[in-house]
Amino acid sequence: MAKGDLGRTYNDGEVITRQGDVGDCMFVIQEGRVQVLVEKDGVETPLRIANEGEFMGEMAIFDHEERSATLRALGEARLLTIDKKNFLKRIHKDPSLAYRLVQMMSKRVRDLSDEVARLKNPVDREHVVSHER
Amino acid sequence: MTSTSARPRERSDELQLVDGSNVAVIGGGPAGSFVSYFLLEMAERSGLELHVEIFEPRDFSCVAPKGCNMCGGIISETLVQNLAAEGINLPSTIVQRGIESYILHMDVGSVRIETPVHEKRIGAVYRGAGPRDLKTSKWESFDHHLEHLTVAKGARVTRNRVVGVSFDNGRPVITAKGEQPHSYDLLVVAVGVNSAALKLFSENGLGYKPPASTKTFITEYFLGEEVIEQTLGDSMHVFLLNIPRLEFAAIIPKGDYASVCLLGESIDKELVQSFLNAPQVRACMPDNWTSDPCSCQCSPKISVGAANKPFADRLVFVGDCGVTRLYKDGIGAAYRTAKACATTAVFEGISEADFRRHYWPVCRSISTDNSIGKLSFAVTRQIQKWRFARRALLRMTEKEQRIGGRNRNMSQVLWDMFTGSAPYRDIVTLAMHPRFLARLGWELAVAASPFSGAQN
Image (cartoon, rainbow over all chains, first blue to last red; front, side, top):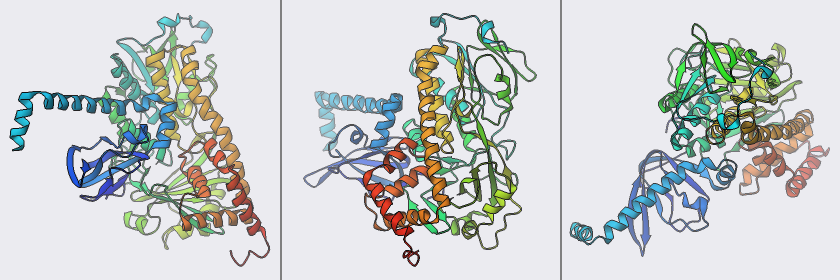
C-alpha cells in the first residue's frame, strides 16, 4: 500500500461486508475489483464484479435492511468508506451530491430489467439453459 | 471599473445562462477549479452548452513560490468522502501521505487519537509541485490535478494575468495582460486573500468588501521518506503549548518533507523560534534536526471572516475571497461555495437576487459556524493557559483511547476540532452533552487536586 493510498486495502478473498450484516456505510472502490455474491443455504452465487470508481453497499444508506449481498475482494482491492449518517446530512444540505449515486442505481435498474427480460424471453432462456448444461 | 449606478439593471429573465454563454473565472486554485468543474458538470446534466475560461497566471506544476498556493495541504475526511461521492477520487500520485491518526502534544504529555473508522481518509498534499529545493517531483500537485480535471471537462485555462475588470451594459469585461478586453455573461472571482487581483474589486461601488485576514506561518523541512516514517509516521502532530500569541500549531508529514504550520496573533520570528525550540516539537523531529535552514517558508494571509456582499448581477466571489472555514478545511469550504455558486448559476440564474437567495445561505452558514468556531478556539486558549486543564484533557483522552468503545466524546471533539471534519456547531453540541460535561468536570477536579501531582 502506497503511503498516499486513501481508504483501506483488502486482501484477495477478504470479506468487505457480509450478507445479513446491518450496514451503516457504503464504499467507493478506489483500486481493484470486488466480487458481489449472494449466499443461500450455504451456496454462494456470484452476481457480478464491481470495478474501480463504483459505489458498493449503497442500499444501506437509504434503508434499514440487512446487507443484501456479500462483498469480497477479487485480488487486492482498496475501498473508501462513506459514513451513512454524515452522508445523509450532506445530501440534505446539497441534494446534488447524490446525483452520481442515483445515476449508478438507475444504471443497475436498467441492467436488471435487461436481465429479467432476457430470462423471460423463451429463446434467450433456452440459450441460457443450454449454456449452463 | 464602473460603479453599480452606471450599470443598467437587466430583467431577471435575461440574467440566465443559456446555450453558448461565456463564463470567466479569475483564479485557478481549488475554488476556481471546483466552480468551473461543477458549472460544466451541471450544464452537461441539463443539456446546456457553456464556455468556461479560467484566468490563472501560476503553473501549479512548478515548485514554490511559482506554483504554490501557500497552504498546509490537508484534505479533510469530509471532503475526501464528498469528492468520492462526486466521482472524484484522489490517487496516491496526488496524496503524499494518508493520515491515520492525530497526536496531540502538550507540556503535560502526548496522546494519539486514532481515526474513528481505522481507515486513512485524510490526505496530505502539496498545492504546488513542492518546496523550493525539490529536485525530483514524485507527486503531482493537488491544484494541478484539479486543473486537469477541469480542463478534461472542457474548461480553457489562460495563463495571462487579469489586469482590468469593467462592466459594459451590465456584462463583465475582462482584460488580461497583452490581450484585448473580452466580454462575458458571468464573472466568478475565485482568488485567495493573498492575490493582487482582489484590488481590482476594491472600491468598485458594488458593495464588495474582502474578508478580514490574519497572517500565518508555513515552513517546510526536508527529512526524507524513511526518516518521516520513523519519526512523524502517518500522524498529524498538533500542539497545544502555552506560548503567548500562538493559537494552533501542527506538523504535517508529507512524502519527503514535513510542513510546519502556525496560526496565531501577529506571528513573528520570535514566536516561530519559541515554537520550533519547544521540547515537544524537537521530540517529534529526528535527533540531529535543526530548525535552520528550512527548505521553504512563507507567511501567507488567511481569511478569518466573511466578505461583504460577495455577489452582484453577473458577478460572484467564491472560496477564500467570499468566505472560508475558520482555520480549518479551507479547501472543503472552497468546494462548498464553488458548488453552491455553480448550482445557482446553472439552475436558478445569475442575478444578484438569485445569488442572494441560493448562494448566500451557504456562505452565511459557514460564517455563522465560524462564530461558534471562535468560541471553541477561545476555550482552547484557556486550556493552553491552565496546566490543570491540559492534564484533565490528556487524562480523559488517554482513557478513551485505551478503553475504546463508543463513549469517546473527548476524542471525537478533539478529532473534529483538529481535522476540520465536522462543523464547529456539531463540536460544541457534542461538548455540551451533560455526560461529557460531567466527565470533564470530574477530570478537571482530579487534575486540580493537590494530590493528583504524582499521577501526572
